Image 1 (cartoon, one colour):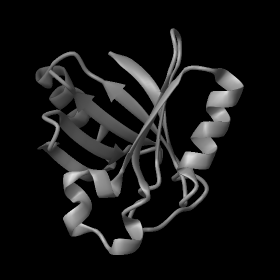
Image 2 (cartoon, helix red, strand yellow):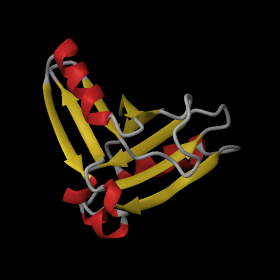
Image 3 (cartoon, helix red, strand yellow):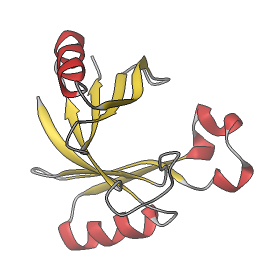
Image 4 (tube, one colour):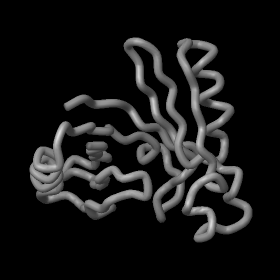
Length: 134
């Protein structure tokens, strides 16, 4: 397993991640809401928002999005720990254990790109994204 930071922004993800790239180097990629299958479910004003951004170099992976929870953007909910699991079994075990006495905010579900993904807030108030791409 590996853990990475996942940042959420309030409409300025592209600006922030471009800044981080200038500071830290690496390859930067973006996917907008309008470029994804989610486009048809989202309001027109969301089409240019960043659904997912990744900044990578040899030792760094920083991910980000303009997508925020139903509660809106608040300092404190703008970062999640992303747990990349090597297998679905490990992901399901970690999801079950981490969500004990916490809140399952996104049930485990296959994504449109084929990964198994789930999200939760643990009993200490920390946000987790768990993913298996295999």
